[in-house]
Length: 247
Image (tube, rainbow, N blue to C red; front, top):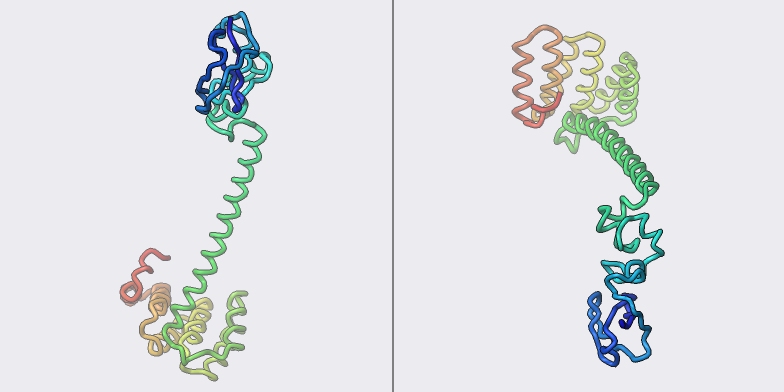
């Protein structure tokens, strides 16, 4: 005859009838359990008892659901232990949860890529203008004309852009950025000589502006003066090695 003892942790223990009144140690949590004489007694062997097969979780010792529910997940483990041990974690326990988490991850990835793209475009634009301006804290442009010229150039209105940059240069002839932007406008119109003249003046005002040399090099290349174009590219990379990897 056997005695059934339930530990405080929920694990069901089996002991021999002569162990009544003694204390045993729970293998699940290490707690000491006292077997009283009035504990439930069963004549069946715990190794063959149907109750033992359906009541105890093999991992944590918690009571298990009925046998038919145990058969659904194929092992003597409770639902808290079985996903981690048999199915590789809680993510694989629910197909619906996997779909929701997968969709959330894809959405976050798309948003992250979009933010990276927008930041890279903005930083590239700001970097170009920062390098053109160079270290000229005391040579600020006439912001109204200069900024309006940038908007005209962005909209391919090069004649209006040239007019605004010219006004900005009249108000502040020491600012290299206005010469460089007007040079870009002339280049886009195909007036290469005027573009080169503006870039020359910008380089005089800011001899360390690496992009100024690169932009002038592009004008020389489009004009067909390859040797000067190559020399300008070398100078630009010498001043700013990061331009080697930029188009």
